[in-house]
Length: 229
Image 1: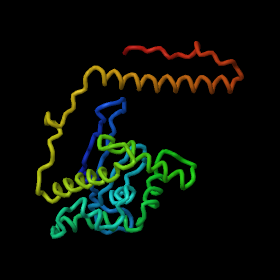
Image 2 (image 1 turned 45 degrees about the vertical axis):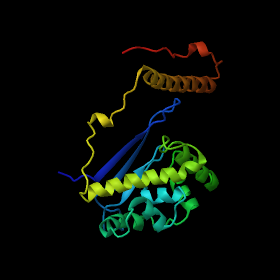
Image 3 (image 1 turned 60 degrees about the vertical axis):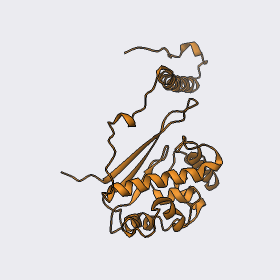
């Protein structure tokens, strides 16, 4: 049996109480094996919305404005005399050693985002807005929410390290305390967003077809009816 690439995985679903924003899910993984040119595992990386690859968690801290290793450790370890936890976090610090600047960290994330063929300044702005609005929106979506998000990310990393060191048990995903109850309103809102995205996609495809064939655009010809299955 092939061993799994992750030894530990954290899933955090972030939902804003008020408004029609969909749930934003962030994953954090501790890798079993290191990448090419690295001699050890235990690197911790995050899966961010609209970013194609996992991002080293230390680079996420630096993109949020916490550049120095000591500042990051204060958000994660809590006790600098805890050498065991410090050593467990060391591979993540070593992995992100080449990124020692907030702008470079934002550009690192922006290069791996869904926005392509844009300059560096726009990539940095794209990454900044992504962290502000799409990552952990329940913590805040304002410009000054970076500090609170860094504390929350640090708390997630701390719990991940505690589990990996067998100091606490992993969470029971099936426990009712981990569940969220969605009533009819949010469920209908999610269904409307899905169907509206399909409608705009169908209209765009029909419009492009009319342009390619040189025909007049007639909205009544678009098949946007809703069918039950």
